[in-house]
Picture 1: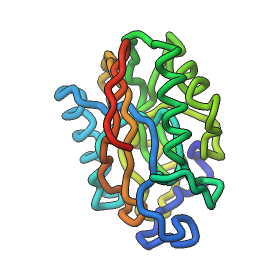
Picture 2: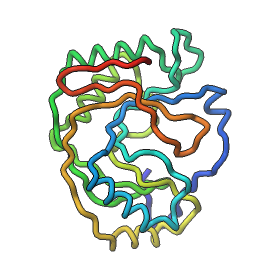
Picture 3: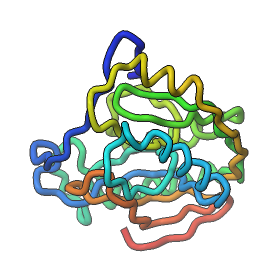
Picture 4: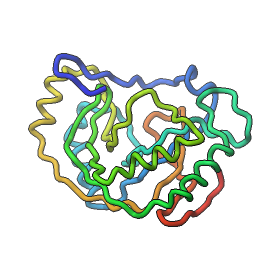
Length: 215
């Protein structure tokens, strides 16, 4: 999962992945968008400094993935294990409403790397991300094979680079740290055929009360 010094980064290949999407269009997830102008500008500067390593284009907003739902289905017909129905979505909303989470804070951490991507660590001292994920998982098991690690992705690697060189650059890079005040969660989708394409918000859950939009 994390990049190790004796290995290489794992590149993402720009291609269609029909064996994954099976012709389905929208992939759904709950996420926290990073919108603070100072934080966004800082993340863009970091990404620019490592641009020679990262896959382009990248249109995806900076965000913290909270929970991966699967392919958004508008009816109750579920054909694949990673389909996500409107019924499951409504159940998640109900569970969030019961939990009634308050506004909470996170903090950006160090620059770090998975084998496939450069990212910024997220510190969650109040453990609210874990509580929210447990709530979302009650009626809908997450579509994910890896252990959850909160982060902000800066970009995917475009080639197989020597890990030690990448890690040395990361270690020398000075990173500012920011407090993030979280007041809403977003359920949104991205187009499965568009690599690093934008996130499209469908529903906003404002912490303390809820606002619906169409599924």
